[in-house]
Image 1 (tube, helix red, strand yellow):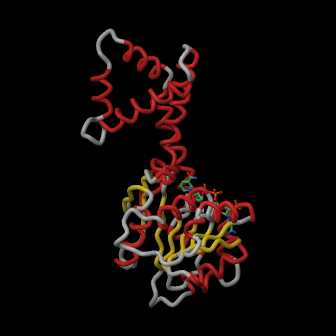
Image 2 (spheres, protein in one colour):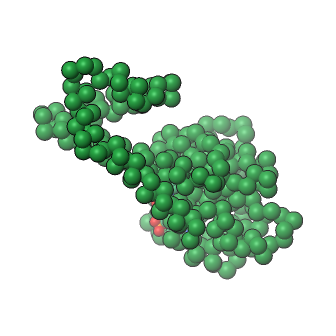
Image 3 (tube, protein in one colour):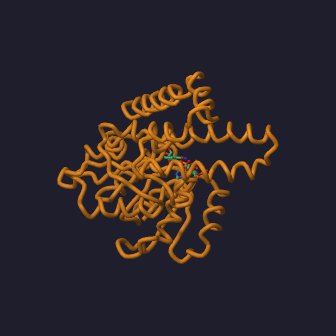
Length: 283
Ligand SMILES: NC(=O)c1ccc[n+]([C@@H]2O[C@H](COP(=O)([O-])OP(=O)(O)OC[C@H]3O[C@@H](n4cnc5c(N)ncnc54)[C@H](OP(=O)(O)O)[C@@H]3O)[C@@H](O)[C@H]2O)c1
């Protein structure tokens, strides 16, 4: 396997597949990770020093070599780097017949097809490409990763490999590409919007005299518990109603937020992000 762009997310996925939770479905014999700069190379080598017999870390000039050596190639560079990466002589040829996984945000399978020059390839070898959107919780194997592919042309074996890769950093789910942009935004950035709320709550706690680490512990543990009630079968607005008892403090706090339009601000923010993702996908 090759990981092209072993940065924050690439490192999390590399960690997951070098030390997999599921050791029986797929066995990665050897992994080559590439990065842009020497300091990143040292960082990745240090982090995975215990896997040095199976892992090689190279610089971007060796992307072609890394791809040539691999059966599965994960692209985890920033989307703005894609033209440089795919435009390097030899990359497109080296990718032929391989399973290509991409976590580049907003980069559609159509764009991946263009980048890999698959139109110019032998049509008897349909492009094996999977577009995915994990989130930062991959760092602690708690990510939700959505992935999409043309399931008419992607082989069952490659679908199994893709799902295995993403399952090593949390849960994964296959989704249709038609609504991938909004779904990917929910997975990739909805959590960070909720962090803004956590930050505001922490400020209030500190202003009222609670130490930040202590308040963080209270807020996170109680919020995680409440959130888990939703997949357990409770609709968020029913929960809101159950928590807000008549004359109590919760209803006053909720009304304060609603007066300020916080609910619709969240809706608008996600729709803006989805629109942006769609524009990138279509450009
Ligand atoms: N961060 C998120 O929460 C998140 C969530 C979902 C999807 N994504 C997507 O995941 C991808 C990676 O994001 P990230 O946050 O992990 O970014 P990142 O930390 O900046 O990682 C990018 C890596 O690519 C390396 N790189 C740069 N140019 C390269 C080249 N030509 N060849 C090989 N490697 C190269 C960089 O090395 P140097 O640093 O040494 O230049 C760095 O290690 C992006 O496409 C992003 O859209 C991110």
